[in-house]
Image: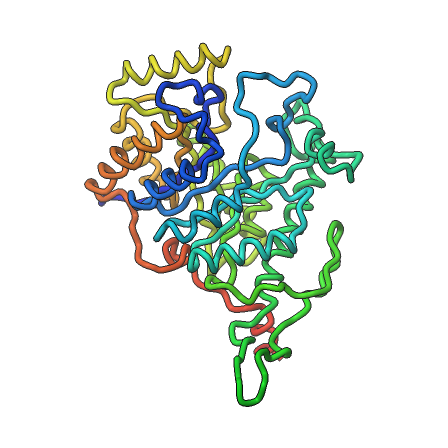
Length: 401
């Protein structure tokens, strides 16, 4: 029996290797060009990739990088991920579009309406990747917080850093508010009855009346309920606290095991976290991340990686497993993960566009020919991933009365 997975792609400026912009195949002068992002997303869409995440951040530096020691050899500056996705929405057909949003400084109301608008623009293919922020550089750009996350604790454990714990509580509350705002209009709230003069049934639009530790919101969304009802919420998780965030608030989680035993341990933690919340109807979708650098031969791949490492001044370090090899090597890794029972694999191209081209023109066709690529019908991203369209919580509350 051939096991199948969805394929995702994670787009990050010139690629996930910090020296990728120096590669001969790179387009460093085009990183802020709409055409650059259009071409990457269209190629991914045409190849049958299920979803694309678009990286973003709220500071010039990378997270936890010192503002006072800005390394000039790294790509600096980026376009807003949500606006890239909105631009690409009418230019693509099937691929899910999930821009990255940092929860510590943005307002959930603005994000909710932006993602709902993206859902309309894409005809039901919107989602969001939430990240907990509050680094020193981010705080300096907003000027509203004196305390935040300045570094990872020596233990590496989120539980040992009160500021990081607070950032994850805020992210969870943020996700909760998003879902409530997306539910605030019932599907049939707009009547458009010219004869009676009633455009809207006000009884079907609900103030969310949310009071939490970080947010206090009384009103409803200004955007009607979008095609998916609730666009997808996704998070990247590495340990217990973010695993709980995923289980409690997300539809999809990206994880980063480096071997089979690591994946088994992660699945056990996710299952334990899910047991604390009723996920019987909609299991959390699990995607494994892989960083990939792809050439036609192993030697060419190693040579390309060594050149990038030399330019960067250090070997590539990543939270995810790194595969430097041929299209067949990537296919083998994806098929191995498929056999483990995960729902999908999200590939992070080390170089853009070179590794995006290799993924779309070489890796994906092999996966399809072996039957390992899961390709499901459905106009919406939820349908494609086998997720039901949820009813508004306010409809459920009325039914329960």
